[in-house]
Structure formats: structure tokens, C-alpha cells
Image (cartoon, rainbow, N blue to C red):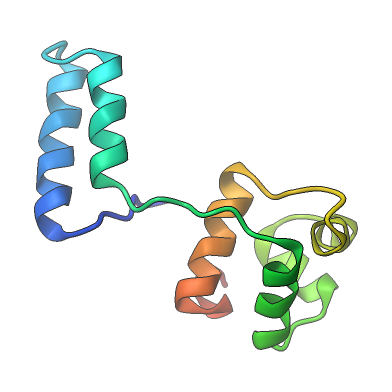
Length: 105
């Protein structure tokens, strides 16, 4: 999945830092700082927000789950607050929130 940057300038800065990190010019700790500064932050999603997002996209839990490559049961647990999305699932939910469900189709 492509990285999402705050701006084109931040993309250029981050790519330069990543190249320096690859050749040993900067350490991992410094690279994490560049990640935090340049990459778009991912916000946690509440159960209500996940359900509202799914309803906005006019998708059943089964269809929504298929687009996110998770089980319908997991979507149900997210919406009830029994589990919380993280990692790739959270990133996909953020993309769907910003661009719509067709972005992950």
C-alpha cells in the first residue's frame, strides 16, 4: 500500500530520509521521527464511527468485511466495541473514510 503524505514537500523529505536510512546515513530512531512528521496520522475509530462509515457506504457487514479482507464477525465485533481495528485494517478504514469504499475495491 502506498504511503500517504501530508504534502508533496513532506513526501520528498521522507523519501530522502528513507534513502539515507537504507544506506546507513540515519538511524532507526531518527527515521521514526521522520515517519511521524511526514506521514498522515491514522486516527483510532470508535464503534459508532465504523458503523456510520459502513452505513454511509450502503454496505452490509458481509460486503464491508469482504472489501476490508476481514470476516463479517470481526466487523460486527468492531461495531459492538468488543474488538478494535489496528494495523492494515485501520489504515483501510481510514482510506474508506476519506475516499469511499470503491478505493479498496
